[in-house]
Image (tube, rainbow, N blue to C red; front, side):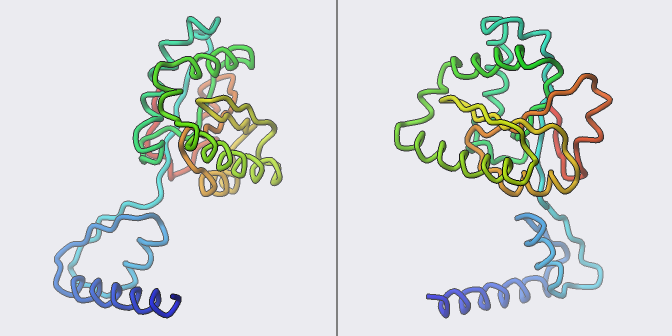
Amino acid sequence: YEHHQQQSLQQSQHITAALSALADSRVIWGGDDTVNQIRAIAAKPRSRDIAFADRYSVAVISGDVCSDTTSALPVAERLWRDIQPYSQMACSSPRTLFFLGDNAQLGYLLQALEQVQGAQDQNSPDKSITRQNNHLIAAQLALATGAAQQVTQNRAITAVSVPQFSEAVANHLYQWHVGDGLLYVTLIKQLDELPENITTHCQTVSY
């Protein structure tokens, strides 16, 4: 099996090299490692590379709209709509929530997410068990390294509390992110805190 994989990889690299020698430009898709591997393959001197490397997105929500579960429902519906496509693995899907409020307001938002129509339907019993196990592993890794403080899990969302993102913390947490309703949550007091909590890999900030 390993021999077959090695042959397949060599054949793929041979095809990529042949196409690169002919191309005037290359669109490279697949994350940092893939981009670096393909860039190492020779191309025409004037060839142009357009690379799509590792990316993540975040959301910012004000706790002022979450005075109770009912008032939080409209924003929960919008957030769920952003999370749901492609099981949260699209580059534009928020993986971290920066919450401009307190724990009580955040609790109302998490309860509202569980009530959002379609959240329960999205997860069949089998998928729900797999999702919860995957989320548990990601959360345990975050807790074990000290990057996270606590975990809140319901049928719609697993919220992993992250006090602050450094470059190293971000690299680990986004590598471990498995999608499907996993949210890293950071409480902030003002928007000025946002730049120090995101990296150059951040593509989209939705609010």
